[in-house]
Amino acid sequence: MKITFMGAGSTVFAKNVIGDSMLTPALRDSEFALYDILEDRLEESYLMVTALNKNINENRAKITKYLGVENRKEALRGADFVINAIQVGFYEPCTVLDFEIPKKYGLRQTIGDTLGIGGIMRGLRTIHVLQDFAKDMEEVCPNAWFLNYTNPMAILTGFMLRYTKIKTVGLCHSVQVCSSTLLSELGMEDKLEGRKELIAGINHMAWLLDIRDKDGNDLYPEIRKKAAKKLENTKDFYDCVRFDYIRRLGYYCTESSEHNAEYNMFYIKDKYPEQIKDFNIPLDEYPRRCVNQIAAWQHQKKDLLDGNKLTHVRTHEYASYIMEAIVTNKPFFIGGNVLNTNGLISNLPYDACVEVPCMVNSNGVMPVRVGRLPVQLAAMNQTNINVQLITIEAAVKRSRQLVYNAAMLDPHTGSELSLDKITEMVDELLEAEKEYLGEYK
Image 1 (cartoon, rainbow, N blue to C red):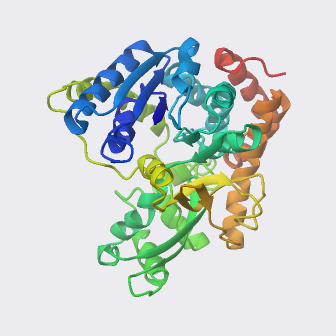
Image 2 (image 1 turned 135 degrees about the vertical axis):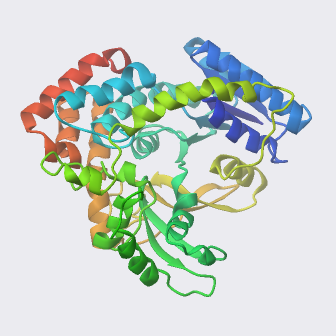
Image 3 (image 1 turned 180 degrees about the vertical axis):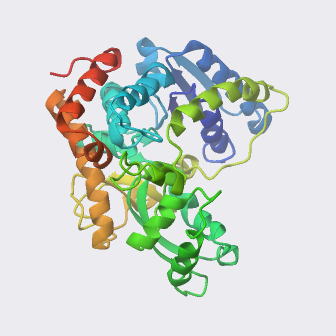
């Protein structure tokens, strides 16, 4: 069996997914093929994975490495699973441009990797690369499963599912920790064990639709009461936006407040600057994280590249569990990003990428039909889906006009800037990132 990791220079994440796989009996004898376009990061990951293989896997696996576009097809050849964790355009220049150019126009962001103008630009950059991945995969590993971890999740997974022949599922970290985070924040840890939940919606805005304790008692009445109390004093509390969702929409969602602050027209508003403080919204959070992560890597890599000490404990990342379920036919349930085929969520568009419960076994990833979302939650999702679908079309058609349309219809962008300013900003971004985008006409 061959497992190919695209973007293997993401060394910490590669450790988690490949380390998890090496601790899984059904996967531990695989070939792990590492692919990246940066030689130094690829070499660091290769040394790390080789040490892991020795320390926790008795050298059972075969570790190979492939550098650069010219070797990409060989990295993929014969793969059974392909893990995608690439970042097109890097922190510099593209993430910096995604934040600094909009800031000139008065548009502020927090994360910029999922929606908003930052998410749109990241989606455009990455779809062009995934087109090439898919073309190679259709030739050299047409039956492989593509496990996508790269953001913007709904845009990229939606593209792969609609415009390629590759079997794809999008995977995030948010579903696994959604209800445990909520209950812990509210001091309801006694309800964690044996709880039952239903989560569905779209990536980073999927909704905790139902949550019950081990005896089947509905926990939402107590959650709503405690959440309202929590919002009475928001000093030093950083999940304010999601708790405000509970207050105003009735439900908690999967992704963090700093993410959700920029997915709508409510919280980051030039006319209401006090809301930034009131809701503890960390503007420019993602660039700040990137700078800190780059600095921290110099310390982390000493431990990760220490072949004598390196070890691993299996994480909650879905990838190894999905591969294990497909290989062994041992069922496993995930929250997966899939196409809304035949209305898995019946009041969202069929061509949207939705995040719903899925069962995985030897037949692959099989999503569960959820039915209708509460109308206000579907409406929130729809504002994001509009941008996602238009961004996909813009990338496929290389249409500048559709990029304008995606930005116009983005809730945060459209609420802050005039149409002329949006057009001007998009033009400047497309020009500044042309090396990673190509021409948009």
